[in-house]
Length: 317
Image (tube, rainbow, N blue to C red; front, top):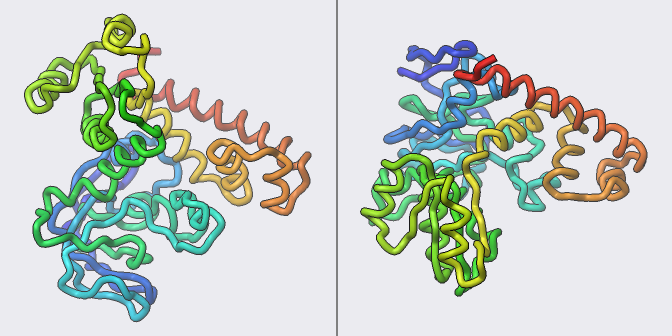
């Protein structure tokens, strides 16, 4: 089968590979009917994802038809149309039990598809933990519509949910790309008083105005004054920012590449915001170990981000 493959930094190629087979009882093999390119795929190409394995098939946004299932799979069967979750997760480890499935400690957990194991920019893909990672597509939903469910739409939905938008709020979304628009649509479900979307690209703003005339649009240089004038509270009640997603992606890629217990330490501190005493308890270490080790790991993270920024394509030295 043909598969779009990460060979080395700066190089993707279309290669012939064997079709995937079931390797665990919880696996499913899916015939891919549609897939998309995510900015995270480009991060791999540019060398910003150190955990990415050369030789893997890229792609983690896909839909398809189940061809085979392992003996332990209960929720899908051959012939089902399915959307594939960007994350694969065991459902049993500490992070899965607390809702942070992207940090699943299983070797095939977290962002594995298209990064550490073969992904979906191919004719077929093996999906570990199929019961958690596959969602059956209703007949009334097309492949094109369902393609957004596994990553980009889910990102927008989660952003709107954790923002706790209330009726009467003014919502500001920075970035009118695909993720920003998905966030805008999900914010609409909460019936805010007004939504403002900000982007420097005139074409993106024109698209929003043409398709969502009730949404206000503005460019960054005029955003502050515009938001103040168009909010009953003198400013946005909720702000969703996507201009810095690339920086955030680098941070999470770095953390996911760490060995244990450093990966868990950074996640518990930066994501869960636990105290060093609580982290020590969870990891069965001392509070002092958690504090000192975190500071050292944080310094390494800062150096990594500085080096990644200096190596960014188009960055002038």
